Amino acid sequence: MLAQTISLFRYLMLGIMSRRLLLLMAILSLVAVLCASFIGELAIINGEAIVVAFVADFLRYSSALLALLMIATGVAEDYQSRQFERLLTMPLARWQYIAAQTLAIACLCLLLVVPALILIALYGDAGLGFYWAASLWLELFLISLLGLLAILSLEKIPQAVFFSLAVYLLAKLSGLIVLMLDESVRLSEGSATSRVVEFIFSAVLYVIPGSNTFARNDVFFENVDLLAALSSQLFSVTLYALFLLAVCLIDFYRKEFNL
Image (tube, rainbow, N blue to C red; front, top):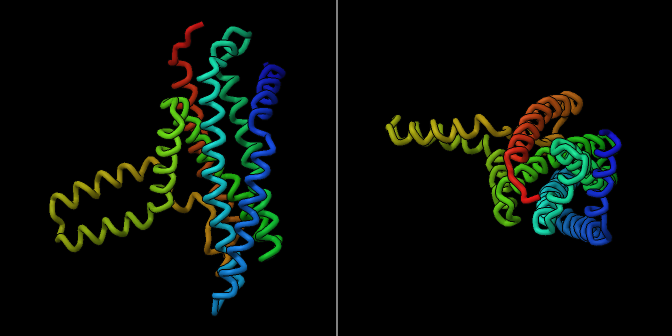
């Protein structure tokens, strides 16, 4: 079974690896460098930290979008070309497809963090570069698994990408949303409507990753225990990744294909 999974993984990687992907990564890196140079000239204080933070965030969001598009496009093409039907006629279990996709996602995310590692190490220092690369890999891996679940369930690229980005941004802004809800309840003197809205959003935020799950920008402006921050993120991402993989398996096994 392991050999079959590895073979399927290699097949999926052939669909991911392309000159187009490398060209897009090179363009994004070039844009990050050019914008960083412009921002560095405008910065009055903490210029170096601001430049590094900008490069890190630019590569973070562009890589997240690129990963989602690559994964959604690949799975959608499998649907359109009836690849699933052909795969299921072979001696392959459905969990092997999910396992191969997970390996492909891990490799894709590893490739996407290379520009961040290089640029942050050049603009900042090697320690920050390695921290951000590892932290960004965990972040991209998590959102990519969410994208895999979305495209398996929705089967449409726009809907899957929109849903994944919506959940991602909601998780990123969870801290701000909590503060806004608390202030709304305070200003409304604890009205029933405000409390109902707070309860609904609190329930939603409870089941999605918190903002502390992702790579932290404050490492560029103050001394932070990088190992502790990375360990906390690794623990959180592991839990959510296992949950997403379990849901992916359940959703994939319930699907019916015309063999």
